[in-house]
Length: 74
Image (cartoon, rainbow, N blue to C red; front, side, top):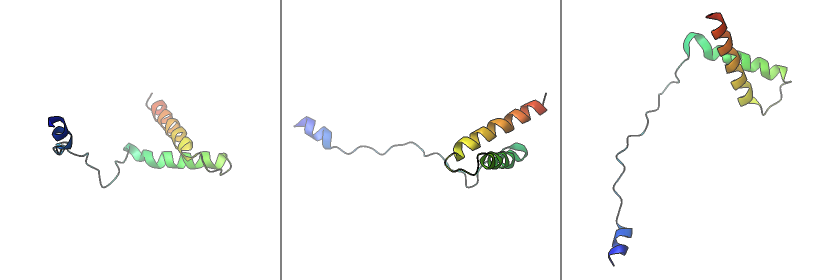
């Protein structure tokens, strides 16, 4: 009967602290968000306004903007 008691015993609540959520998104330096947004929009236009590739367009735009920033610092 001891094993049945152990199975039905209540667990102690977790002592972990949940991650804090910022009320506002963190803005990348130098208006990078706007640059990425504009580039992603242009990529969407170039794709012929086809939906379903928004994440791909955003990631491509990030890579392009980051490369442009990297090149400008050389």
